[in-house]
Structure formats: structure tokens, C-alpha cells
Length: 103
Image 1 (cartoon, rainbow, N blue to C red):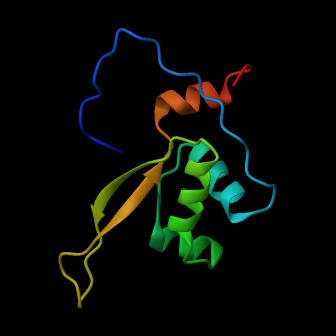
Image 2 (cartoon, rainbow, N blue to C red; image 1 turned 180 degrees about the horizontal axis):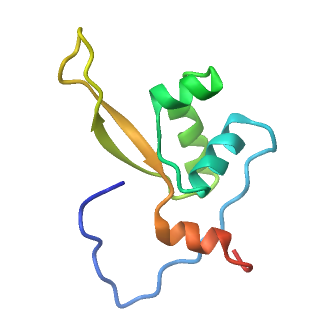
Image 3 (cartoon, one colour; image 1 turned 45 degrees about the vertical axis):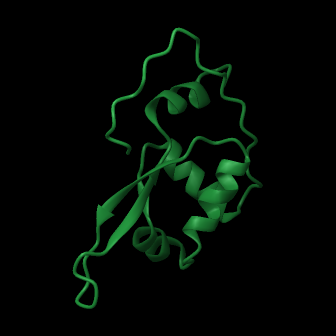
């Protein structure tokens, strides 16, 4: 999750109005996990789904209007000791809106 402080605004946030991905797709599975509060990295996603396409899934979710955030996390390997990967999540403010009865 992005650790930078959020800028205050005098304007109300835009309402969350994303489109849901097609049922049973990788985007649907990833979104369900993120709406459950889970944060996903590529290695975790690949282990759980067998797919290495998390970045494409996140791209699709963002295109559908989901505010997926990412932050870099260390993921060193023997070949790349300073390697970082992205960890993706839906921010708490969007979770509350998406899961509300009107969301």
C-alpha cells in the first residue's frame, strides 16, 4: 500500500463506480482477494493461480475503474539481491465504498 500521506481536499471524492470483471476470470479472482483485504504480489498470485499475468490482471481492473494501488516490496533472489516486486491492493477507502450496500 502506498505509504505517502494522502493529500487533503476540500472536494468530496469521486464516487466509486467500477465495472465488475467477468465471473471466473483471473481478474475476478484477484479482485475477490483484494476486496477481502488481501495484498497480492506476482509470486503469490502465480503460486495460487498458476498464472504469471498479475500485471495484466491489474491493468484490466484499473481499466474497469478499480483503484488498485501498488507499492514496491523487497523480493531478493540469488541472481538479483536488490530485486523488488509490486504488491497490489484496493485501498481501504475504496473497499468501504465497494462493499457498502450502495457500492
